[in-house]
Image (cartoon, rainbow, N blue to C red; front, side, top):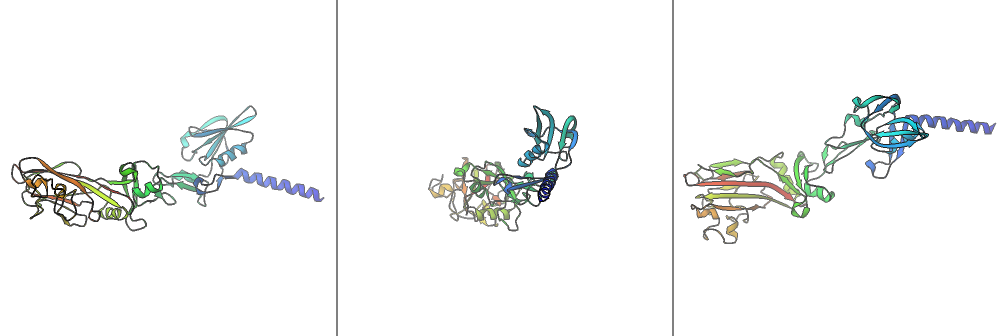
Length: 362
């Protein structure tokens, strides 16, 4: 009697277990896949005479329908499968990375085939910003695998303060557009930047464009500083860029002025200057030390007039140039350009302002 009860109990366990497998599949995946060890999938009722086209990721030969279900549970990309006719005593099992919810137009009638989908939360596209959704993981029944520059349950937040921080965490990251959050958990919003992953020995340079990068003429402005050009940076406010300078070890911006009978005259009442992000009038030029009242040539005594600190201060009919990098990150980026001394017909100038670049981690 006891033996019969044991056999009946074993049969009951097998029946219950078989029914459970018919409803939910649980599979062990490699450590590190989606940050989870187990995948649990709820399969829907099989649909006979239908086939999902165009999304097959792998083919298998199996003995039982449940074997195909298990194969799907083991493949993290699988969200549905097709069971085909028997060939050499084996069933054809095709795993798909989409389903009838995401692509209803691809579910087609096909004789001798069975289609089976899943309860797929990824069908609603919960992963933002090009994150990849894998169903069957975590209590939410899905997990998002985010691009290198993003974080959060649904890839909704920027993960890194700058391109250098990103490159440090992901050494193989390539140049391209990324989202950064220069103040981390602070009040400033994340913003999009270009990351140059090859310049500066591949440290990861954050590059910010603006609307005044092209060579621009200055003509007809005689009074000192009467020409004014505001600089508008692409996709970022000055407060965000100031925060970027705080988390970067170096920042720089190229600046150039080409001149004919037009000078700076930093040594007296300046005719031209640049304005810092905090609205300070800056009376020195690219390549010179902050506060020096000079241009680059004035730092090594190579100016066209050896008694002046800038080539343009020669103030003659020859086209001359003063240019170089601004590197004081506490004042960058440039907020505005101001020029004068171009009111006469023989007086002209051209200004060029480069992109704002920051690199290294502070």
